[in-house]
Length: 182
Picture (cartoon, rainbow, N blue to C red):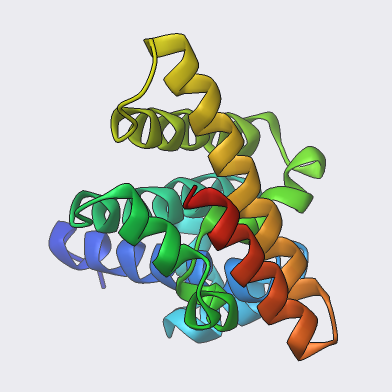
């Protein structure tokens, strides 16, 4: 039985959402096709008919995760609120719905050119968003400050998630937040 265009689009979106969440939670290499289809409530056939390959799904899931977080950014009022929320224990503890840059950055060098290109486009967009909220200096100075801020945010979150000492994890978030608020 043929699936309507609307149902096919709904299935595609369901697979993308499940993939972007699972890849942020478990890592790209930690999520197989079985887990993806199970989480989306779909079959292998439906996944491959939508995306053609796992590699293509990874590319689109990376782009989807970045776009979804980008939508949330538009709702944020200012840079200081963003920094506080980003460097929070809640964000650290929920990687599946968190920043795709922090969740996926360490795996990107081993991904396809397409996945890396989508990650890069998203990163450049994030730098632009941050730069647009900075008021001091000329455009080049704001862009450099945005790059430094983004590297600090992502680095702090990656480290806070990586350590086994809860106090150290909290200290990483707190001290980076304090430094960025200057």
